[in-house]
Structures are given as C-alpha cells and as structure tokens.
Length: 237
Length: 237
DNA sequence: CGGGTGTTTGAATGGCGTCAAAGATTGTGG
DNA sequence: CCACAATCTTTGACGCCATTCAAACACCCG
Image (cartoon, rainbow over all chains, first blue to last red; front, side, top):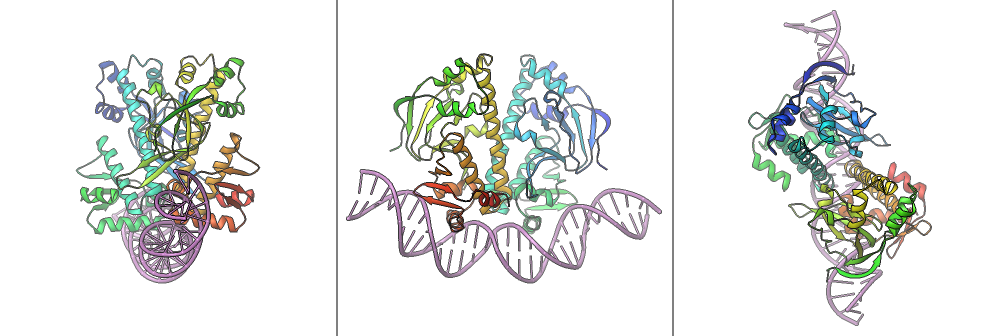
C-alpha cells in the first residue's frame, strides 16, 4: 500500500546543519528552523503529491530518499535528481525541474514547511542568513544538475558511477549520515541505472569491478569507500 | 582573430516576435522592445565575455548562434545549451547555467540590453506582459534543458539527433528563420557531437542515414526536413 | 591555388544493452 | 520463528551500437 500517513512532529534539523556550514545565523533564525511540523509518510515507490497552490508547496525531507523522475512517451524512465534528508522538494518559486514527479525511493518522511518559507520570502531582512544560505543551496543544486548533464553526455559507465558515489558520499557527509567512509545507499540498481543512463546489468558489473578493485565495499544497502583516491581517479580519469 | 567589435544599432525584434505569440503588449511595451543598442560582434569560436557586474549582464543575440560549454578536467567538452538569435545569453538573476562559458558558433552579433531588463525588473507593473512573457520563455528554456537530459540519459544516437533537429527547427520557426521546412544550421558535426554526447564520426553516420532514408536533406549548412512524420517517429520511437 | 577546417568512409575494437536464468535479500503472513 | 513470495542482484552468452584510428575527400577563404 502506498499512501500518506500522518505522524510525529519534526523540525528542519538537517537543513540547519547544512546552513550552519555556510552562514551563521541569529537566535531568531535558529528558532525559525527549530519550529516543528507534523510529518507525512510515504511508502517506497509512491508519488509525493505536489500541492496545487505554489505557496503551499515547500516541503522538507526528514528521512528517506526520493527522486525526481520523468517518464517519456516510449515508457523510458529517466531520473533527473536524487533527494536526500535535509533537502527541500519544492520551494517558493516554480521551476520545470520541480514540476516533475517526485517518487519515494524508500520509506519517506516529509514535513510541509510552507509557513517558514513564506516568512523567509516575505521579509528576508528578518532572516538574512537563512535567505542567503538557502540561495547558496539552490545554486549548489543547480550546479549538481549541470554536473550530471556532463556525466550523461561525456562519461563512461565507470566514471558515471564513481562520480555518483562520490557525490552521494559528500552529500551524506554534509548531513552527518556518514560513518567513517560508509553510508546507507537505498538506491536499487534499477534506480541508479535510470539516473546515470546505463542498464541494470551494467550497473551491477561496474559495481562488481569497483568491489574487486578494492575501491568500495557493499553490504546490505551500505556502501563503504575503501580507496577514496582510486574512486576519485576513476571518476575524473 | 577573435575579439569584440562595435557596429550598428539593433533592437530586440526577434524577442518581440517570440513574445507576441504568447502575450499581447501595450504601446509602451512595444516601444521598450524597439529601443536600439549598439552591437558587438564576435568571431566564431571566441568566448563572449560575461560582465562582472550581474546587473550589466543582460545580453541579447541579434544574429548568429552560440553555445554554453563546459570543459571538464580530462579535457572533454560538453555543450549544455544552444543559443539562437532572439535568445538572451544572460538575464538579471544568476544561475549556474548562465555562469558557463558562452562561445560563438559562427559570427555572432549581440547587444547589451541591461537597461531594458533593469527597467522591467524594477517595475514589472509598467511592463506586465513583457515580464510575464519573459518568465514563460525562461520556463521554456529550463524545460528544454530537462528534455536534453532525457536525451542524453535514455536515447539512442538516432533519437538524439532527430530530436535535436526537431527542436532547432521549431526554434527557428519561432523567430521566422524557416523557409518552408528548411533552416540554416551553422553547427558543425563536432559541435553537435559535443552537445548530444556522440562521436563526430557517429553524428556523420546518423546524418547520412537520415539523408538516405529521405527524411532530411542537407546542403551547404542548410538542413531541410523532407519527412516530418518520419523524423518525429524517429525522435520518439 | 594552397592550407586549414569540416565531412565522410572503412575497418577493427569494445563498451554496453539485451535476454535469460540462477542466486541472494527482503519483507510478509502464518 | 520459519516459509514463501516478491524483489533485487548477479552471471553468462550474445550481439549491436557506438567509439576509435586512419585516411581520403569536400569545402571555404585569403
């Protein structure tokens, strides 16, 4: 079954953590980010419904991963972005990327932060650091999209997957989800293949190669980087 | 030699034409778009310099094609977007896509329209239709970028090139650059290959196939669509 | 007319996709 | 806690699409 369910209350802790590495904010700003909201949950594979009213859209991921997907006429599935805890699914403005379907990768918990985002947008002078930090995060997101276009356009299978692992590791580190050099990777090979533009079989092969070269180690949904230099070299070539 | 040179004065005629298909504007708005600016020219292959000051950036293409490019560490060249006459190279905001290098494909003539864009941004209520139309064009641009990611991620060589030809034809039609079903295509095979993520040789082969299947005809930089249905079918598959 | 740039072609190689089937994991209900 | 089903992963075999290398060919411009 795959529908939303209400639950506990959460605040934007992980976002606060990410922002803190870029700007330092006031007590009032800290308080705004500490506000709690009641959560909604979605099962893996279900679509997160986008509110009609743009001002009601701002939604924040508390836990679980999601992805923006696009099904083309011939039925092919292309993932355009991967969303992690601490990410905002929708923001105040509306861009085509945010109009794509958002699908839960695993059990997803989100909160609607339209109130906070409205407050920030209406009077940026009251929360200057948050506003600035959010803009920086927005830029970083777009930059990742461009990097991904480069991946799709001019990299080999090995480069694409090595690059993806590095990106996800970095993002997990930012939100404190790394244990040493290991992090939980809920993406199935099918999801990876739809994101990096390779077949499922080939994703499996590349992963095996990385494993046999002692560059990574995988175990029950956890991926550990054993040879960061080697992985980086593979991604860059 | 490849540097800028000043020249005649031009106005945003093609942009006005594109906007007119989406919104209808007042006499004052028409006048704003009819303002003329002194042109700068760039030779094919040269980089169009981006002004430091964001507010001075808004630049409009009068004639010639350009592209946004990204050179990765290993030297690979990936084109992220193709710019045609009537397009804006930079706008008021700054997005990562607009921070990429812009290179002239052929002889390029541009005008700096910072004044007009500033007027529109500062008081959108005076030029509401233009503001709305520009927003629509901006959305269309982003949507094209997403389409291109789908191209790179999950389409075959034939699909990519057929889709590209259709896109360029449609954009040329919008600005009145189509004669029947033919339009001038200044992109070299090398440029196409860097855009759609194929090798130069393969681009040549696919073009030959399209030619031999009587789907397109090419002659000295002009490409004519002979079988629109066939081309569309190829692109969609 | 010569040189540079762009296009085309052939041949050989290989990366990657597809098909098919066997394992491994996970989750669910009894 | 076990059994079973469903999903995910892995592997082998095979073939094609696309790349690479190399060289010939066409085109444009001074």
